[in-house]
Amino acid sequence: MRCVNPFPFLLHSAVTLVRCSRRMGAAAWVFTLCFGLAACEPRNVKNPLRTTQAQQTKPLPPPPKPTEPPTAKPAVQPTPNAAPNPALASLPPPPKVTLTPPKGLRDQVPIGLLLPLSGRHSELGKSLLQAAQLAMFEVADQNFVLLPRDTKGTPEGAVEAAQDAIESGAQLLLGPVFGRSARAVTPLASKAAINVISFTNDRSAASDGTYVFGFLPEERVRRVVSFAASQGIQRFSALIPRGPFGDIIAADYARAVNNAGGILVRSERYSRSTAALTEAVKRLGDYNIRRAALIAERKRLKEIDDDEARLALKRLEKKDALGEAPFDAVFLLEAGEALKATAPLLPYYEIDTRNVRILGIDDWSPRSLRREPSMAGAWYTGPSPDARAEFAKRFSAIFKSAPHALAALAYDATALAAVKGSKGGGGYSANELTVDNGFAGSAGLFRLRPGGLVEHRFAVIEVQPDGVKVVSPSPESFVTAQEQKPASTPPQNPAATADPKDSQTPLTQ
Figure 1: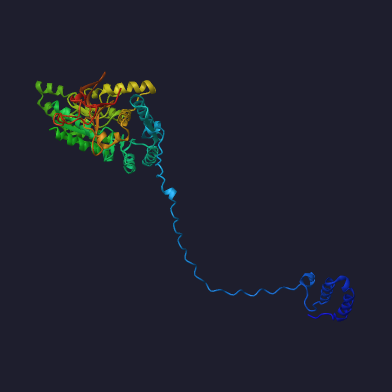
Figure 2: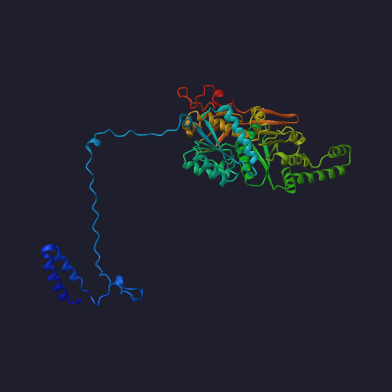
C-alpha cells in the first residue's frame, strides 16, 4: 500500500491543533489523527464491492480439502438401567385384564352347515337347509346358531365354505354332501380340532373325526338279504350296472349272501344301454339255453303225436323258454325310471316274478313303480315309512313342498348337534358323539361309530299295488343282550334307561 504524503497536511493540522488545544483539548488530537490516516488509499487492490459487472473475472476454484484418514466409530455403550424407584417397587402388581364377550354371545354354540346352495345341486342343498332349519326350530335352544355356507357342489367350494365357518367360530361341521368334498374338508377340520358329520354315503370318506352320515349301502344290502334268508330264500342272483358304485354293491351283496348262509347262483353286470341290459337279463335267466330246450321239446312232442304229447304241446304254447330260472331272488340296484325299464324285462325273458322275489335297497314307494305288475311283492330296505311320513308332513306344512329323500339326514344331524350343543363345545367330542345306545331320529335309529362310519337301522318294506307295507319293522335298539353293560355301569347317554327300547336319545318332537 502506498499513501499520499500527509506530512504538509499534518504539519498544518498540528499548528492548528496547538492553537485550538486550549479550547478543544484532547478531542482535537484524535480528530486530526483519524483524518490523516484516511488519506492513505491502496493503489493495486480493487474493492470487489466497487467493481462493475464488466470488470468481474471468473473466480478460481477453491483448493481441495485435505482428506482425513477414517477413524473408527466409538462403540455404543449400553445405557445402564436406571435405578428402580423405591416408591414404584412397593406398589402391588397390576390386575390381569380378561376381555370376554357379552353373556348372550359367550353362550352361543355356532354350527357350520356346508351345503350346495348354488350350482346344479342347489335344489338338494335348499331342501337340506330347510330340514336343518326345521330341526333348529323344533329341537334347539336360543344359543344354537346355524352358519350355512355354500359349497357350490365342488371340493374347492367345500374347503372355502369350511374355512369360513371355522373362522366364524363353528364348533362342529354338518356336511358337505358329496364324498370328494368330505375328504377335502377333513384335513382342515382336523387342524381346527373340530368334528365333521357329512351327508355322504361314501364310506371311503370316513375317518377319525369325519363321520359318514348317509345311508351306507352295505347296511341296506345286509338287511334285505338276511330277511330274505329268514323267509326261506336260499338261491340268490343279482343284476347290477357296471361302474365303481356297482362294484361296491356287487361285493357287498356277495358278502351278505355268504354271511346269511345262501348261495349266489349268478351275478350279471351290464352297461347302461337297452341292448346291454337285455342281454344281461337273458344271461341271468339262462334264456337262450332254456329257449333252445323249449324248441327241442316241442319238436320231440310233435314227433310222438299222441294225446298226451298234444296236451303237453298245448301247455307249452304260451311259453317262450323251458323250465324256471335257477334262483329264488334277484337283486336290482336301479330306482325310478331305470327300474321301470328293467323290471318288465324279467318276466318278458321268462324270469317269473311271481316265483322270484325282487330285492333292492332304494325307495320303491312311488306310485309309478307300484303300478308296474312285475314289482308286486318286491322287498326293499329303508327308514320306517311311518317316521318318514311324519317328518315329511311337518316339513311340507312349513315349506309348502315335499322334502328331498336325503332331507331327513339333515334334520337328524342338526337335531343331534342341537341336543349335544346344550353341553357347549364339549358335547361335540368323539366320546359324546359315539355313544353305544345311539339316537332316535326322523329316519330311524342311528349311531356314530369310532372310525367315522354311522350305523342306521332299517325296515324291510314290500311293494303292493295300493301302497307299501312294512314286513319287518326297524329294530328298536342297537344294544343286544351281549352288548348291554352291567347294571353297575352308568349309561353313557343321560336319557338311557335299563329298557333297550327306551335307550336312545330322542331327536324329534
